[in-house]
Amino acid sequence: AFLRFWEEIIRITSVSVKEISTILLIFPEIELFGNYELFEVFCDCLSDALSCSSIDLESNYQLVFFHPKYQLRDGQARSSTSEMAAANFARRGPWPMINILRSDQVKSAQRGIPTGQVYSQNEERLKSIGVKTLQEMLTSLDWSNLPGISPKAKLENIKASQERAKLLAEKEEEINLAKQQTTCPFHSNTTTTTSNQIDNQLDSKI
Image (cartoon, rainbow, N blue to C red; front, top):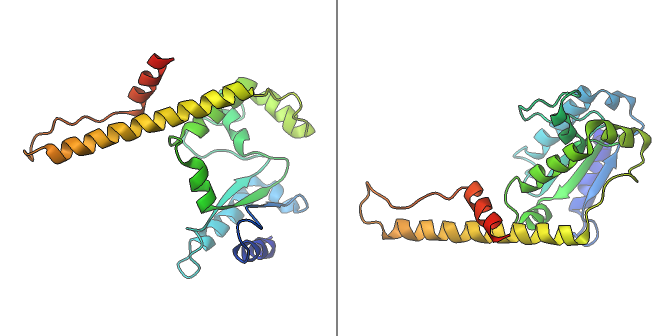
């Protein structure tokens, strides 16, 4: 598994993004990886290796891991009996897998999208489907009953994300300008605009 990983790292570094954009490594044949804890240790080793100063590949590539028993480590109640467990399926797959991504492409895809919005939307969508249904689809490898999102809804989500990012940028510019105009170092009339306030402004426009 280590050899396969480094072979793919060498392959993606030796060609342009037009030739290879991303690589998905799948390990269905390695029974040892059926144990999620062992797979997680393996993945930690790969992440640590990429961040090694002598290699310095962490700035160029990102790793995303998938496993049939993947569980988020974010401090939330993600046990199998919890409603919050649905979020685990964002990183669950039929086999242990490693997605090698180019950092530049990830940054480009995230441009204009508020931090955390994709994750929160994914979690709400998975919760609406339910843990039982998600597990049945994963076990049977049949996602035909997965609810779809209409093109109109997708477009509205994109527009909302762009509008929200624009408002945040405008508010940040106002704050920076106010800071520059402030003459007293002990007082400031600037205010911090939270993402919730931006959400309220967008809701008022709908």
